Image (cartoon, rainbow, N blue to C red; front, side):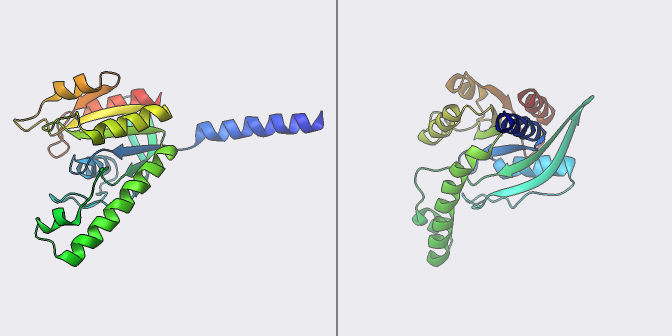
Length: 210
């Protein structure tokens, strides 16, 4: 009986602390979708600082980046979380693609190796996420192998998902395509660079966290 009570009390305490833990919200998506630009926008809004470097060359972010204790507010609501910016997911990373961008061969090979390791780390970190924000470039076709792989992994883990259609400020943006591709999830169109519709994104994040 004492042993049973001990287990019961331990379970209660474990659940109590689990509920009080800080949420981890991960930014996922293919390279150059705007994850780090969005991470910088969120961090600037609530911390007054950037998360990481942004580049036109794919795989600028090759390591997991974390900002702790971000508190966002909307009316009487407040959401506290750690923001995790992940390297872009890709099915193939070829150092020759970096050569075409003017990067020297030695650096290109190093970048490809780091980017590959970053993809593996991103997928491993999925198991630590409470919410995932998938950031897609709304000017590109959403029906890609990478996007389907990301969404499939999230569905298998039953992780709450918000899909962001980024770059809605560009003429080629087509948010409807993203909504048609992934109708099971809410899709919010934003411009992380210009700040368009960011408030709507925050509201959607609040809804997922409830």
